[in-house]
Amino acid sequence: MGNGSVDKPLQFLIIGAGGIGAYYGARLQSAGHRVTYLARGEQLTALQRHGLSVRHPDFNFADRVDSITGKELVSSRASGDYALALLATKSAHTEAVLAELGNWLRAEDGPAVLSLQNGVDNEGRIADAIGLHRTIGGLAVRIGGHVVSPGVIEARGPGQVILGAWPTAEDNPAAQTGLPDIVEIFCRAGIPTSLTEDIRFELWKKLMINNGVNPLSVLTESDTRMLSNDPVFGPNAYRMMQETAVAAAADGVSLGQADVDAMFELIRNFDPIKTSMLVDFEKGRPLEIDEIAGAVVERCRAAGREAPVTELVMALVRQKVARRDELASRV
Image (spheres, helix red, strand yellow):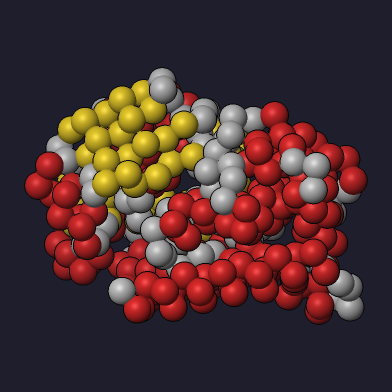
């Protein structure tokens, strides 16, 4: 990017037009950019027939959209036409997306890929598939976004984005070079965005929050504020965040007690949000328990450390999901 690109309409690709991906796509489209939304199933059908509707306290969008499948993208669109691809699928789908779109993304003039997913393992997989120089780590913070019905999104929160070259700007200067332009384009589109020199650190900070509240929200069926302020569940969420810091250290990322305290205070005082994991549970979908809690337990074990609260909660969540699925199979 560069050469005045922040002042002209660009074309963006949203891979995964769910609550988060569709929200950011609508913001960019509303700002005058061209956006292609990759979707499937009922969501794809609704987007093609009726367009996209996004409801947010500070932003409303209702318009026709360009929505296609991955197969159609590869066969009919030139990757060089896109300035950036935003990957917003569940982490469990990352490898399938890369298998389908990898050759298209690897084209010489193909776009960089910005991951806005949960977990700390997606960027490494993207880099292995399309090259480190096109891999941008990112996270969406202080946003809740859900598909309430096909083609209809409800979102809340400022929807901030933090992004940076993976794993750090020092390790990947080629990817970092064009990011100030992306930051400005996103900010102009109503997406508060900041650039970091160490996105891996920021991703572990987000995982600390996700591990602290997402699995427990499924067990308690409560929102983030209620959970984090509860006299029993709150301290256990805090312990799971401490265990995440231990896991981060095993991955070479230093998160101190001050970071744990700051993240815990953030979720205690931020608007109450129903976590994406709880929404997935209620809708009968697979959960990102392995990508969140599993990543913590795995790294702690590898380092010879324990994560007893995370391990227990993860086992209880899996048990609850198994019961949900068993009951559903009887209907």
